[in-house]
Image (tube, rainbow, N blue to C red; front, side, top):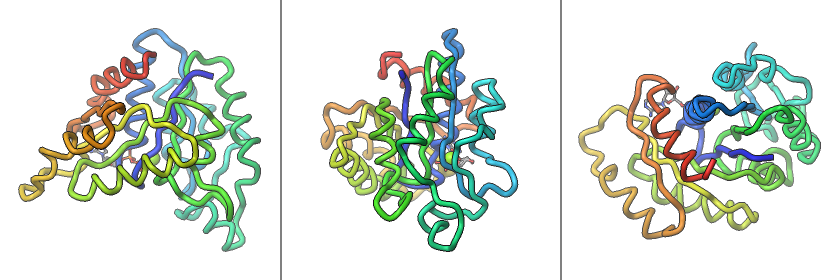
Length: 224
Ligand SMILES: Nc1ncnc2c1ncn2[C@@H]1O[C@H](COP(=O)(O)OP(=O)(O)O)[C@@H](O)[C@H]1O
Ligand SMILES: [Mg+2]
């Protein structure tokens, strides 16, 4: 299975927007794409991320396909399980389900949930699903003060779990805060820490469509 696993330093940093833009960029190259969110919480009543991804790849049925984890509360899956809600179950089965759903596609784009170490159950985090999927892993990070530590922590945590990071996306999520001078140097510092990991900078945009150029750049890096 060829594709990308989109994880991040945390929630709300642009995974869904990037994954949608990546799906669009891939389809512009004439590829059949399956964009999937295997685990989504805060589903009340619809899986908003999964729907956005499904819409982007033109396959609405992927959002509510059986066998994917959906839960109402906006919490980590393990927190939901501890409160008596549904548990994710076997990550191996979930990875197999993703593969089945992507069977007809040339390329699969899988969005994680939250940041790299979100607890899925007592013994597993989303990084373990990433390892099982064995796709090209992309870490999305918010280009703002603090991103250095968040990103270095994320890359090291993934490496420890045998997931190598193929690209870092520095995403300009926030409106310009004049006093955040870190934005100008964050990419350079990360490049020194990770000389072999390409960094793609994404500007502030109005919608995922505004990210398609950056997503195409990412596709070139991933050699898709
Ligand atoms: N490059 C960007 N420019 C402007 N707003 C962005 C950008 N990236 C993300 N956002 C904003 O951040 C929100 C969270 O992005 P999203 O992709 O849903 O994050 P995640 O999937 O990581 O939780 C989006 O709804 C959008 O409002
Ligand atoms: Mg998302």
